[in-house]
Image 1 (cartoon, helix red, strand yellow):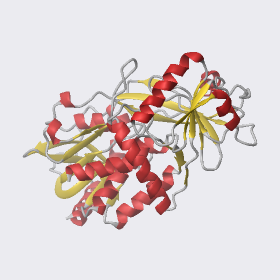
Image 2 (spheres, helix red, strand yellow):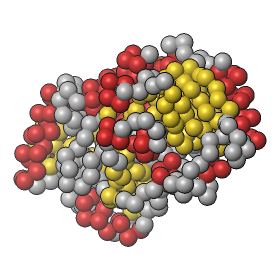
Image 3 (spheres, one colour):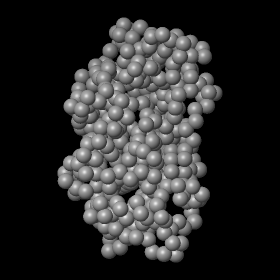
Image 4 (spheres, helix red, strand yellow):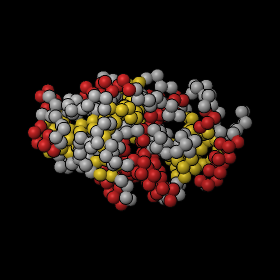
Length: 415
């Protein structure tokens, strides 16, 4: 069934459909929309459980969005409210990820991190973070005085710190490459340059409208776009990250009231130059700020040190930009001025002109400026009423760490 559907899909996307003709319709088993790290992990898990899986990705390859534009940190699960999905999936995902990396020789390192208070006013917040981490069962957490932390990291300045020994770093591309390979070995198929532009309901089952990505180059996202093919799956997982709420609103028959609003927060990174040796051996995190967990120190597996991300709320994102990942990922050099201010609170010896623009990512958030943070949303039929449709909304940090746990949950709950 899947092979026939794929032949029809390729034929439809190659030849296109007559303007007023009826597009070909094919039945398939499982469709995962979006080939970021979470979508890939879900596809692998479904395929490992014997299901036929088709992954549809609008870009030319996997992991081009949020999955390749983050800190590449394996989080411990400290910050998130107790019993939240973020807390549960981060803890489970952390353990699964370390095990998976070890078994598949994926480059990673458990280097630990320090969360630091640099003023007396931040110490109560640090104590609250410690309490939250303990409630979440994060192993090995330790509160230390500033003098002890600064003995560990001589370039650091702080009054008090939390050591999290189970925090680590990972080569995200190697992880995704391995997950894709495993999924394909179990029969999953990835169709790139393929965009789901919407859908409709027939007998309470979702029918996906498919188009070749390049055919949408001049589409404004508002005028009707004729699908080149319609797929009728048994199970659909909307794992499109930044565009998940926007796509769900284009499924005719789903009430918009059950779809959360989408907010976008850009985060920029700057790399450290003019330094022969990295000044830190651990990840260094300040007290969290609204919309993020602060401009922190991250090391990659090659020893390159970077700072970020900051938080810059953006709006005016239209459907087509979201669908096709046409976000502004540029990093403007003048943002470094704010970085110097934030970083020197815990790294006072940071040299002038030592920060170079790195890269930027966009967080797919469900809450905006001044609003309390919102948990992951994994939405099934009990919420939206559509058989076989799973929406993954707001999968921001710790989405990378949680990816294998989210996949496990989706497969167990919805198959």
